[in-house]
Length: 274
Image (cartoon, rainbow, N blue to C red; front, side, top):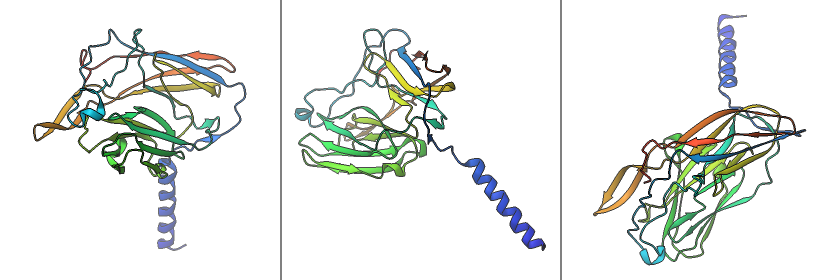
């Protein structure tokens, strides 16, 4: 074998090894026998701070209020709503649900729901229920706020289906409105496996049909406090929030049994909601 041929083969082996090493695990659907359940609650550490909302500075008649809801929704028992709970790195388990259409509505100058989870094969339908111009500008937070899509909807009742959200990598997309409504925000979590869920109004969550074994379970919650406000003509143009909260624990799921995991969310800036 000549020297050049040997070098070529060595280079091919090296490149193949690099690709193999860097490839992310691909989730595989398999029958789950004696699957277990993970239940839990996400609670706020301490009392819920008094919320200070962002001002509504445009289209107040349509928005029907003077300020926006706070980003930290807490029950009377300090249960935290809209936290995303998921298993990290699981590669085998129950199948995804059939591909579906997930709806993100713009209603009274807010995104509804505020946080949603969808698989990378689901479709996203965007609806404008307001008689004013809105746009949904979605950024990939994991890739330097790269724009994934930017949809303008000037007509009430307008619907747009985004069938190529799967071009984004799994992770979290931030959706905002550039049409003079900087208080509007939503989070779209693109899941690469079906073991994702969102806490309810009391902070409860549940993951079902989990293969028995030991896992890392994670919590994600959006940042709460404003760290920067960009102004234009004396009005807020854009808000930047603190980094999201990410917590993790280890959990062992027994065959046919239930594991319980609770999370405690401690604010970096106690007393600051927005």
